[in-house]
Image (tube, rainbow, N blue to C red; front, side, top):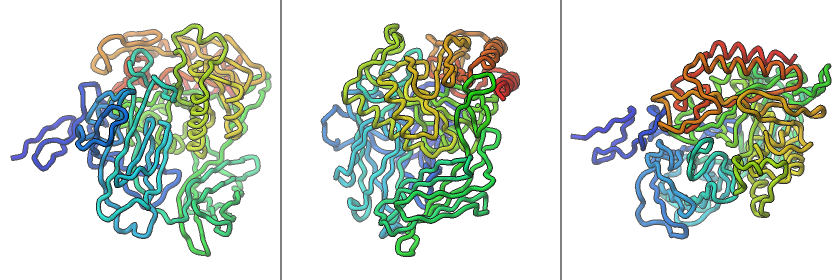
Length: 601
């Protein structure tokens, strides 16, 4: 008779009848934790903006081991880990800290589908934090540094017959070294959270032809009714042809062909413009031909939208969306989960916070010192929410507690640290370049690791002239970029104003309310101000909103409220960390938020 162990509704039995995987620890969890199936983890296609019909998901139970740095691959492993949940998370089934003196090893086997014969096989990692080495069939095939961007390897030359052995080794220094890490620390407290080590996004295989499309970049020009498309193709020759079709449903709006090395420009007459009120997306079909034969096809999408600035009739420089003044208002979104940490338990959960942000009457999200999986940005594109994208902060520089850190001067970083910052920031911009929801790049937050601000702001703009650059959200301020960004807690205040750039309130609020049975920890829960019930929180929010309304009229062009959810010791979310309780009067908040957005015409 098999013994059945049941917890949060999930059971996976091995041949001897014992569960191989269960969530670890006793922390609060979201309702989606019970929907995690270890045999079918995050099964959705991981890259909707560049989609092929055939792929294989490698998420699931892998073997893991934690060993001191420099040790060889172990002969025996410590147990099972559920990929792609970081080892420190509950949903990994492990919940262990690795630390800077150790390395995390993963191992699994897989078979290449027989139908992929004569195809090249790509191994994709959505994201791994931080330094990754990959071995296939005992051969090191590649490495990668950076915790927030996808990377891949062509594993075809290293495949053998039968089962393939895949081993991944990861090292992560978290806050002990210079790498970008966002809110991760070794000793979490206050506004700093649990460290995340290793694989935290989907691992997957994809069959392609030797000549195949690797990247599609789109830039819309609504003033000229034109869409520019750049297609990068692997092993393509100058004589190979790229064809792009723009579709409105089943109707082909525009078609263009060019040699594989050329930029395509397509006319989009009477374009349907994308906005939060009308998030219309055009579908794209991209074909690659060689000697008249179709060798690759991918599906994508794009939007016709424009982000810019313009001085209004009162002389205030305003943000404009599609050539109309647009007050952008949204929450500070940390993107953390009590059960998965960096990784949402399911795709439904991933989309939930965005949907609730819309329900609350916001039109924007500031994605705070974290980068999300590709599907999160696609959800934003489809649901219609503007995104301000932060660069995850890092380096060993003093943290926010140091008053000297706000002396108005940038920090000096090592040559290695500067080079790594630029490498990872460029990779993030390249990764997210074609998602229409993203309208603002934010290189620095509150002087955390801030350096060479004018240079970084100008360089960011050169990488992507189509978006606005917010050089330092609440940080040391320089007259560079498109935006002056102030932070003030708890209530809004406009203590600086820039007559030549957009002025915004990049953070305010932080109204806290701890709710029993929905807390990460029983004590030391933190908020800028704290109240006891939903009405008190809502009343305080409305009070701040009314103050903000006056400041919008006199100069603010955007504002960010802290924050979407509670996170670990922070209890200042509009929702609890487990997403089970909305802590404010949703109807009152939504009406007030829409009122604020409508102030700017």
